[in-house]
Amino acid sequence: MAKCEICGKGVNFGKKYSHSHIRTNRRWKPNIQRVKAIVNNSPQKIYVCTRCLRSGKIQRAV
Image (tube, rainbow, N blue to C red):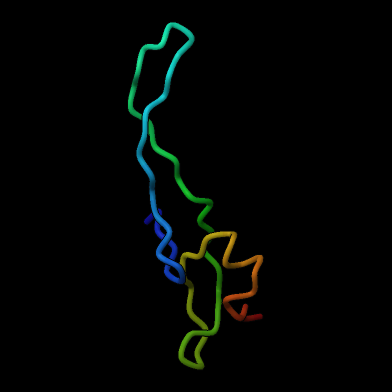
């Protein structure tokens, strides 16, 4: 679910370093919102990242 249906942005993986330099796994999740948008001339609910919402890559349905 944590994937943008417009740009395909998903979860990134990496390491978290504590003060004592102990490494643990962590994830960076994109800010995904469920919005009603116009897809193929019909309103649908899709999962979109806030970067695509802000840049106007989708047309919101009212």
